[in-house]
Amino acid sequence: MLGEPIILNNNIFLVGPMGVGKTTIGRHIADEIGLTFIDSDREIENRTGVEIPLIFEFEGEIGFRKREQAVIAELTTLSNIILSTGGGVVLNEQNRHHLQTRGYVIYLHASVEDLLERTAHSRNRPLLQIENPRTKLEQIMTERHPLYQSVAHVTIETGHRTIRQVVKAVLKHLRKILGKDEYITS
Image (cartoon, rainbow, N blue to C red; front, side, top):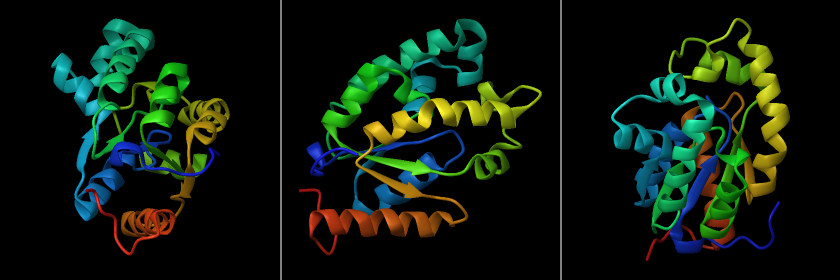
């Protein structure tokens, strides 16, 4: 965990594995507290004009990660945003640095079992389009969990909670660290 929490530039960055709910939860939090919501994966798709699986197909994971690094470097310089990041954003040291130094990082965590259940029918997750997605998710979490923890100011368990319950937990945490009854962006 990082030192004393400070919400720099009124930015909140959501990290965690694919399927944990970063985009859905991020949208709800942004609506609740009046910040602009941005999804880094959608931003990459908007800029390239193609979906992420196609980027993986033609450029591989390395090509995608280069695009992701450029988008994270740019988006983290904005203010008053909730940024939902891709699951592998923490693999890049520069991304971790930008996230840590330009906002407040919330790690949304779920078990491999929960992630497997949530991603079972998704065809938009290139890393899981294999024979045994459980093994891949276990490998991903083994590799990335320490990185998520190292960049995060706080970890929020999503487990068997509903989206609404997770949003409430995040808002409760933000009120606690800010010492306010509600989040104020100005």
